Length: 400
Image (cartoon, rainbow, N blue to C red):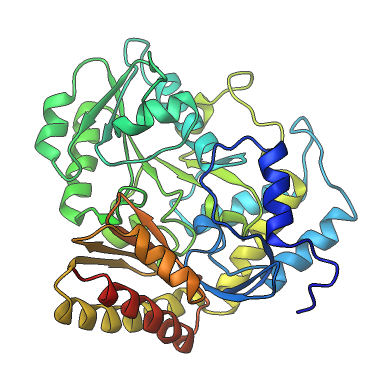
């Protein structure tokens, strides 16, 4: 890759220092292009990406069907407001409905927006005195004030009080604690079937069934945040399908549009009318570009049998990482659901992330000690081994 006309990483970093608010901790390099599970920096170094797009690029970087659909659409119609109909948005909603529990979709631009819509829907659908929503310790639902209040992690609340009222928090996996929190003011339960930012913690089927029972017994909405788990990451279209527990409301984003910004709320036809005209909106939600990208992403998953591929590569990851766990005492736990992987360590994970990046592998650490991998679902077995060679060596080298 020629870098003759590409600004260096240092030049780009200098631009950021001068003109971009430093609200992110950024790695000291500038990425210039991506293809599949590889990205290249401004100096031409190639990296194998096991955390593409912070979970948004589940189909890899620049997946050809999505690129082609966006290129066609951007030359035809970029944006129209939701006071008009576009066929692509309607077809996209139909395709999501058919692959989930039926019902209807509200489109927005991100997971945070999808969860804000769910919060509004819960309050609008239930009697006026019901406004409380039960969420879970270690969960993560977004960065706006409502979604931040729903996120039961104190580190995200610092300096932002008073937060939006109405959220009560239960330990993840503890249905008895949920039962004790339910009162006459409770409207809904909002839960991630697998906590992503919380450390890839996988809910048991029994816990999710208990939540469904509690919701039914008390007239509550059961809402699943599938922003990270949805769109095929676990080997099913949606994680709720692994457990056989169907929610009333489901939120989606990240991988929904193959790397293009897009979010959605899905709910049943009985509940949907509560999100009535004038009560909620998203200016760019369901725009023609996002809709075409979302359609192309679904078609790509099915035409290339990528749900089946998730199971295949998850098996390779499991074999490599279980062998590592058996030989390396600092690996405390291993949690795998398709291509959603958490490796809990007895040491800090940040130095391992740095060591892997230096050797050409991009990964993530969450909760300080959990290595999180969200690789593309079209990863090859050879790429799994390539990345695991680097990752396993870095973890071994981190032993005290």
